[in-house]
Each structure stands twice: as structure tokens, then as C-alpha cells.
Image 1 (tube, rainbow, N blue to C red):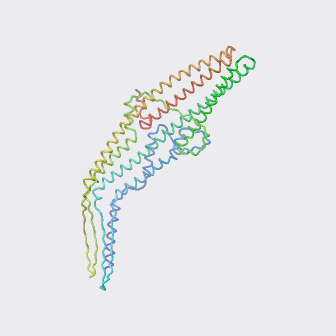
Image 2: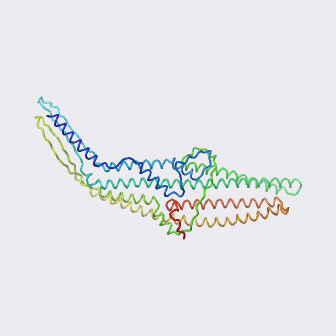
Image 3: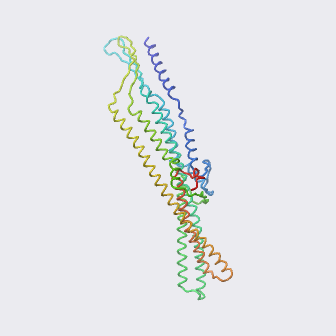
Length: 445
């Protein structure tokens, strides 16, 4: 009799628990689709088409597409964000389940010589999950949405950083080549001046001046070479492989044409497209849902079987209600967290406005300076062309031609710096409005 009752009771408790579990666990813990959603969202906001499966080896020339693809697959923080997505998906499954039922029991042993022994079996289930389940699910879903947005936002950030480092290394490579050309011209000047001094056609002062100019050119070349190596190392670090050798060629990237959009157009696009703003909006939705579960009535149901020393058996259904003395404080905390999230969103919007407007102004001013320097280079090229023609006709001495060539190289070096500033500002502005200008095409001001 005793064994039969215990068996039936435990069977019923198990059946009820399994019923709760299967009724509540509607979601899968498989986060594959969520990870793919994060990648698809990032792809939509990337300024260029990137194949994440694209491979790169240090012996190959490095394009910006390969650099970004390599960085996306090797960035540790991005992999961390993707693992958080898996965690958040599992938390949704947890939110849909009831709280874990409690089953406890006790078996007494008589120590006074009497016969018989007591037995107590009890199962308890908290019922609060019934009316807090919708809010808990919404909260968990918004946490998952935050994780997806965070991973996508990290991908966009990686692409922006890598593009800036890539264009910096590319232009520094060009600067190093120009510095090498300038050092070669300085060496020619010294050689010609020394030969003229040997026949009395140049003074020692002129030779000293040519030698100093060569030393300065060589120093500039060494500085350019060192800077190129550093920019390549920074690029490798941004790609997630700082241990690789920097002896690789950087393929120049093409910067997309930028139309002169107004601040209002850029800001409108930024508010719609920036994922950090979307993350804040998801947090507000999460905090709103948490208000509903801040102070729920805590009710538990229990079902017990009891057998006394005299072999009397009883079934004891019951319930308990927990009085929440800190209920008002919990509700106040939840309301405060919601307000904090709202104010953080307002502050972020203000920072977005500031960032977009400043970067837009920096881009326009740097573009204006670049165009001026471009005209200087164009004029220098015209001057060199005429000087070279005069040299071929025998009207120009080599020492008259070389300074014009060196002046043009210096102008090109200045233009490279302005070009780098323009490209950096443009990439930063593109990142500030959400990652890409694609949605702004056809909206020229």
C-alpha cells in the first residue's frame, strides 16, 4: 500500500512537471538564424560588398575587401558578441518555461522503540510565472535584439576601422615612393654640383648645400619608410592578426563619390540607420517590459503526501502567498531604470547630431583644401612639362630642372596628406550616419 501510493504520487508530480515544461518551452535554443540575422543586418549597412569567406595570405596583395573579410572572421570582440546571441536565445527559452518545481521528502526512523515510521513527500510549484511570462518573454526577446544589433554594429565598426587603416597604409606607401624619388633627385643634384665644383663651376658652399639637401631627403625617406611599416602594423592589428609580417603590398582602394547632402538629410539617415540608437530603443522596450514583472504577486501551490507513525496517510494540497515588503521599492527601481534608458537615448541622439555635423564640416573643409592643393600639383606638372621641353632643347641646365621636379614631388606629398584627410573624414562620416551612404543615393542637394 505504502509503496503503491508513493509511486502514484511521484508519477503524478512528474507528469505535472513535464506538462509545464512541454507547454512552456515553445522556442528552440538554436541561435543559428539569429547569428545569420546579425550578419545580414551588418551586410546591409556595410559601404562595400564583402564576402566573409574570402581568404587572404600575407604573400598576396591586400585589397580592402579582403582586409575587412579577414577582420570580420578574426575579431575577438565580434566572436564574443556572436556568442552572446547564443546566450540570449537560450534565455528566451528559459523565460518561456515555468520556474523549476521543487520536490522534497523526508523519512523518519523511530528511536523510542515503537513500530512504524513517518514519511513526507511534497511537490511545490511557484505560480507567479503564469502572469509574468509575457513580460519576461518580451524582456528576453529585446535582450536578444540588443545582442543581434550589437554584433552587427561591431561588424560595421570593424569595417570602418579597417578601411581607415587600409587607406592610410595605401597612401603612405605612395608617400614612401615619392620620398624615394626625391632622395634620388637630391643625390643627382649633389653629384652634378660636385662635378661642377671639381672644374671650378660651383663653389664648395653650393656643394655643402646640396649635401645637406640630400641628408634631409634621406632622413625624410627613412621617416616615410618607418611610417609605412607602422601603418601596416596598425592595419594588421585592426584585422586581428598583429603577429603577421608587414611585407605585403596594399592595393589602393576606391572611395565612393560623395554628394553635397545637407545636415538635415544626413541626420535623418543617421537616426534611421545607426544601430547604436536601435540598441538603445531595444533597451527602452526591455525596461518597459520589466516594469510588469517588478512586483508580481508571489503565489506557490503545493501537493504533499504524509504518513504518520501510526500508518495514517494523508494528502495535503496547499498554497502560499509571499508578502513583498519591498514591492514599492522594486517598482520604483524599474521605473527609474526605464527613465535612465530614455535619457541615455536622448543623450546619444544629441551626440549623433554633434558627430555628424562636425564630421560633415571637417569633410567639406578638407575637400576644399584638397582641391586647392590639386590645382597646385596641376600647375606644377604644367611647369615641369615646359621645363622638360626646354631641357630637351638645351635651354635648361639639369640643376635648373631638378628643383622643379622636387617641388612637384613636395606638392604631391602635400596632396597625399590632404587626400588622406578627406578619405578619413569621409569614412568617419559614413560610419556616423549608420555605416553607408547607399540609402542616400538619388537625394543630391
